[in-house]
Image 1 (tube, each protein chain N blue to C red):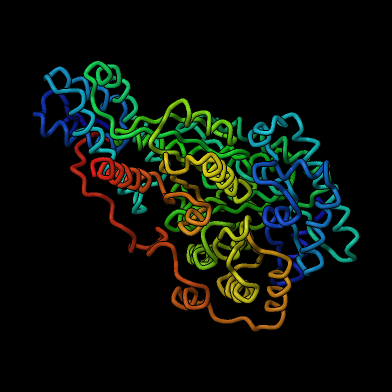
Image 2 (image 1 turned 45 degrees about the vertical axis):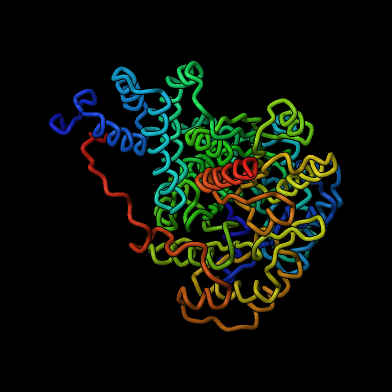
Length: 233
Length: 339
């Protein structure tokens, strides 16, 4: 079916319309359109950091809210995150050159015995989309792997994920090790995964349980703001 | 073709009781978090026999084998991807042994959980790849003497179809349930009505289909009501969790009491479920009370959502995506050409 009159030529849009369109395209997971839009904004002299925050992050925030509210589900969010990643791929080297600020650093991984990384990957992508630097340890992470990464990466946040009731108690093993080393307070510990809940998060000594990737981003931002306020005080 | 044990039981009785939790029970026997439960089929066969014996003694008509994570993708994590045949076959053999010694017909259902991977085009797993993994597992469960295959906790329709195809290739009768844990849908956005529709279109429909795990007992029953509202004619399965997981004294405890699960079982039957069991947190003690309630309490009218939440607690979301009461999709300009 020909639909050409409805087709949009991104380069003909003014900045404001283009950013609006990019948000729609992110929502629809249109990777090539996001790449094109990102390049157009850069050609027009936009700072890489502005493209990131005003187009990509702003667009992913909408996706995140609709995911949180049960309007979008995993397939749509994965497509959106993939499109965002394509835009990020263009921006990353430029951001490094211009020394753009990151709002925080996170180490994230799925716990030992657990192969499930769908939710964890979403968290990783949404956090990047929100401007965090993320080091993803992958699946099946034992306590040594987590602690090693904390030593090496010195993140603000440790994120742990589990999908199985048989693996979720392992989060406590990691937290207990941090407590034993007297380093628990150095990190914000966020946990998530389908069988978890807030009470479980509290019981094992995490800072917060995050119901989904969108909530993880919001929670991480809150904790980072608190951390900065404390540092200033 | 001779009639399988499950079809036979379904023709004789108007409801059947399935089993409870596998993971919870194995933890109570000393399984360590992070270890693969399937290894115990070989390393601790006595504990697996005891796992199966629990529901048999509690009066279950069906129990699931300890093979939930027994596909190559999941076992790879424990470097046991080459042991799919052995671990699944032995799990089914142990089940056969326990079932045959029970003195009545007890169905050995070969549990097949998700691969844990996302399917194409969103993820790396192809349809054929998923079929191959499930087929390998299905053949082994069949060789060990499983009566039926029991595909469970699936969230993606493609993965469900792949498991169905594997059952067809293995020439095995099967049942299939999905986990509706995200605002009343599966995490992939699949609704109860979608599943009811999907099973009718498969070339080899399951003997029964339904829901397992998910959030709480209330949500699960809302899903089962959704199957009924969609006009489904196949027998439906309800296998809900015994409440919500809590961390008590170093282990996971589910807060649903045996009394609550007894109420749940009777309500599940009133919601149109024919096969009723529990999932995470459901112990033998729960099953005994469920059986008793199903045997002694009369059938009732189809409960309203209010009646369910009054008896079992509130729902996790206002809508499950099968009515128009859910959150509205975002207003779009919609000028972009859509494929």
